[in-house]
Image (tube, rainbow, N blue to C red; front, side, top):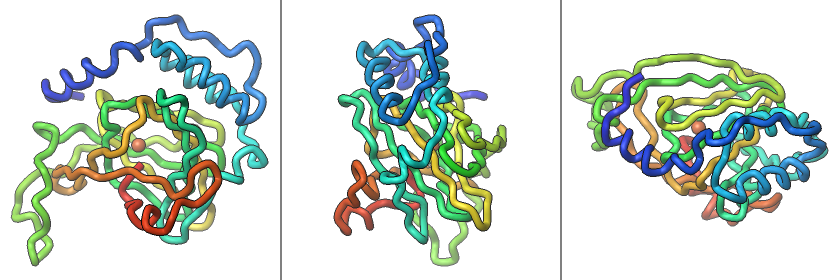
Length: 240
Ligand SMILES: [Fe+2]
């Protein structure tokens, strides 16, 4: 996969302190409960030097127990929701995403952040795409006839992966873009996401044209309590 030099520079300026500078360590014992997982993540992220494999292993080591997380898992009938669990002392955001049947995200990037994603219930499909040329021209809005007058090119799909219960996935912008969806027509899915550093907006991409637009990322609930209605309505189905 190729990324533009501008993206490369932006990534390199952000990522070094989080690159794999330490040998990965398997947790001494399986993480017992979500509270212990959060404590362990706080410990890992304390000094800004974080091993990606280690974080993945620690998250994989926690075995999902709905009793731990159901108080955070608030669904919406029409779109997936983002529910803040912990702010990680400003180093990361930990959140639970709740996906009803057939719910999915738009294609998006991750604002130069690391994204870890662990399945707590059900299955999610992750479809990855190459970056469009020059990182994607800004979306100009749609014509009345809804077409794009031949401008832009469809995003190129590079992989497709199903994530099942307790699996952990990882992506950052150097690995491409992705879209996540619940492929089930009947069953919900729940996933635990860690983003570091936290971010408040990302880019979403038109899969047909590669054009990008900026999208705020907001929360449906925080620490088990729904945010006010106005903030909830600002949550777009495209954020992730
Ligand atoms: Fe994502």
